[in-house]
Amino acid sequence: MDSCGCRDNFKRMFERIDPLLKTWRWPVLAMLASLAMLGAAHAFETFALLLPCPLCLRQREVYWAVVAMTVTALVLWQIRQNPRFILAFNIMLGLVFLTGAVVAAYHAGVEYKFWPAPSGCIATEAFNMDAFDPTNLNQAQGVPSCTDDPWGGRYGLSMAGWNALISLVFAAISFRAAGISLPRTRVLSPAE
Image 1 (cartoon, rainbow, N blue to C red):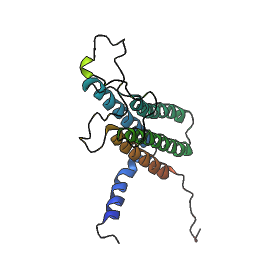
Image 2 (cartoon, rainbow, N blue to C red):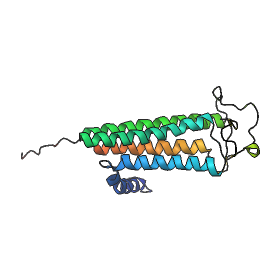
Image 3 (cartoon, rainbow, N blue to C red):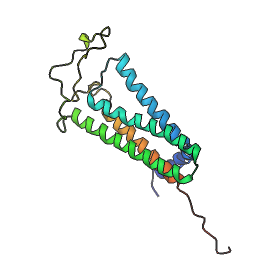
Image 4 (tube, one colour):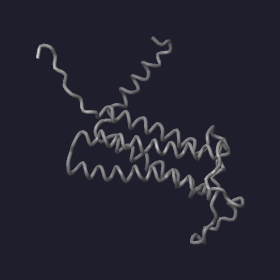
């Protein structure tokens, strides 16, 4: 028995969220969470003028994939409802979110200088936000470097680091939802 009661706390937490992971609740919630992450990214870009680097855009592709997959799966579910489809879809969601966590962790590693940036990800000159011209959006304004942490480490992790953590949590929830949606075989009692 653990002294802090952590196991019991986790069990109670899972008992509270498990009903949200049954049937189509989690895929719809995952799609809404993905739209919220995309909205946050676009808000940082629009209002804080934090233009995305190529690796930032790669991270967004994962959330767009979740949205497209969920809409497609909901349409397919209306055509043929099969409980195993939910299982397979939740596993696919988990794998897509896991891919997002890997891409974001790679970007965070580039920002923290753990490994070099891929080609095309390093700005040849410093990107000057003061030179940004919103009246001429048809012209390229410049591409920020993938090696720069726009938050400067003020929030413990870079934006990519937080995105990796969030994607990892979404992947874990997706795999938990797959486990919950796993078709159970009925076990006969000795009396039957």
